[in-house]
Image 1 (cartoon, rainbow, N blue to C red):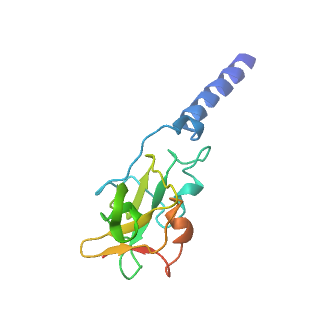
Image 2 (tube, rainbow, N blue to C red; image 1 turned 30 degrees about the horizontal axis):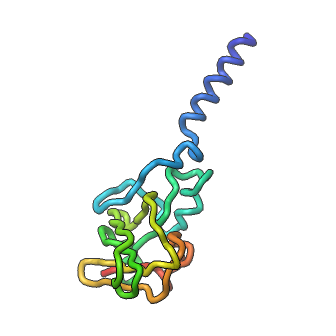
Length: 152
């Protein structure tokens, strides 16, 4: 009886270990792509979970959600570009496709240096952030309907 309880605890610990997130997935490469439906929790700050020791799979360097021009529904399959100059000038430092759920994310290394400028490309528009960003947690600031990232 005592041996069965010990064996059951050991098996339960192994199962929990198989499904636990955190430090074991620090080097996992995850990048969103047009048409993909792997993402979740549109509009939330992805980096709350997808960080070192966090409960999310992978450590995101840049992540967020794109909405339509009315800022009422997610906008699928856009493109996020990061430049070292304003209005899509200078060198392109990173490009991330937005998935079918309106989310974008990457675990790939991006050097923000002293800051990067963001361009959000939809089917008919490209929107440029005026200010530089030094952090890729887009939904941390773009967190409500008045200031959402959008495309058209």
